[in-house]
Length: 193
Image 1 (cartoon, helix red, strand yellow):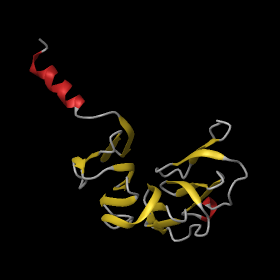
Image 2 (cartoon, rainbow, N blue to C red; image 1 turned 90 degrees about the vertical axis):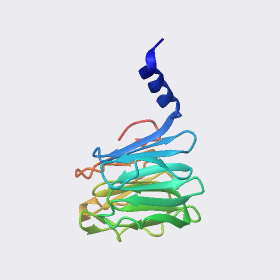
Image 3 (spheres, helix red, strand yellow; image 1 turned 45 degrees about the horizontal axis):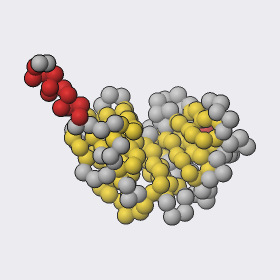
Image 4 (spheres, helix red, strand yellow; image 1 turned 180 degrees about the vertical axis):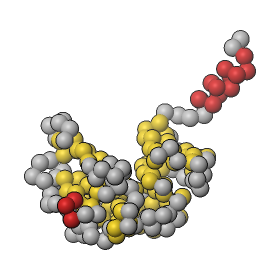
């Protein structure tokens, strides 16, 4: 044979099913969401280094980890320096969430946003409250979301980062969690903007 070391590596690899999402922040927090809805996180800080109880459909991290359980309830834990969200499980059901300093979530019942926390000292209470969203991405200084009609709308911690929805249609969006305040989006034609 291959010896006990190889057998041990094979057994360890078989304990993890294929991953469907992997997230990390600055190497401090790393989480993997697997195809069987299990979530595994590890960290140098106060995030559990193990399987997280429950079944999950989405995870996001930026100092704090927030994940959507398969029942749509939000669960957050970890460092809460940006006053992102209280630890524990929410009563409200959400369809999407993103952490990037602040936390923004789309309520499943009406597709409206809830945001909390700060952008490096800037409060996040200036966000669209009467607009329906389908996806959200929170960055270090900017939030971008896909509206229900696939138009893109972004806003952020500085006045120059606030603008009206685009006329173009998109299928995916990502706001950079770094300090650039940039974002990218996939146009419905497949072009990356």
